[in-house]
Image 1: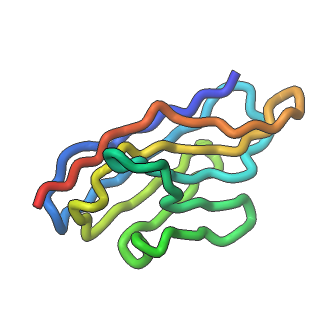
Image 2 (image 1 turned 120 degrees about the horizontal axis):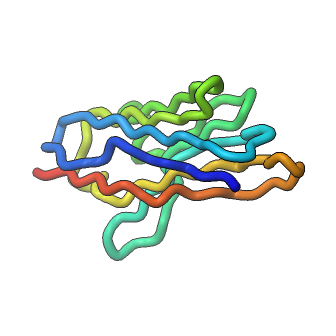
Length: 120
């Protein structure tokens, strides 16, 4: 079994910063990609940032220049540094990972979600 555990959400004023973390654990053979999605109130889930193993990160246009995704492969952890936050960044943020498990099956896994609220 594979689990993703997120941390770092909270309430922040516009212009502030937050850092999200997501650690993968369990029967992991390899992690092919890790990323962050978000779901604003009343809207669909959308990609925020994603990084594929051995590749460059990609970002939603709305966060380019403000958010930075990074990975610590030794810790199976992905981070999202969010700067210059805006009220429209308010959402539940979900960690996602494409993982090949110990029996060589590959699945998409999701974290439980962490609330980010940006006040104006």
